[in-house]
Amino acid sequence: MMKKTIQLLSVSLIAFSSLFITSCNKASTNAAGNQELTPGKSEVRFNYSGAQSGSFQSAIITSTAVSAGALTQIACTVVSGLTAKTVQIIFPTSLALGTTTQASAGADLTNGFLMSFSTTGGAGWAIGGGTGAGFSVTVTKNTGTEMEGTFSGELGNDGDPGKVTLTSGYFHCKL
Image (cartoon, rainbow, N blue to C red; front, side):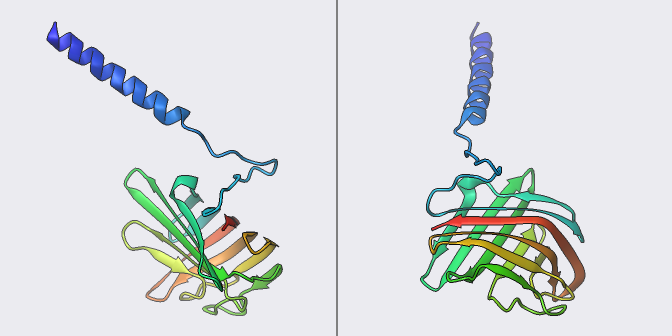
């Protein structure tokens, strides 16, 4: 009798946990499919191929957006199974609207937009790293407290010839 009670409690706990996890308040999205953000949160998403391939979609609960006056930082980490993926973006808070493209392989962007992407196992890439080329960022919104834009191009690694190509990149943050 005790064994059946414990089994029933275990099954009930698993069912309740599953229901709780799947019914938690999901981030709402706007008409464009972008997440509605609260202050201090960010959204980053992109597809990547090359040295590794897959997609990245930040989770509101593990994303941050902070400003130290002149600089804004977006940080997002996503864990799937045993793989962790981390994105960090730093840019001037006064980032101008428009498109900036990397001048040459290994060069930084002239508008001060910095981005790195890393995965479990020490693999990591950045704008201006190694032979990464053709990175472009388009800033579509900057109110001083909310920034949004798109990006694409290659991220490289100074210590490794491998690189990743990002496509369909999107960033959004609210301070």
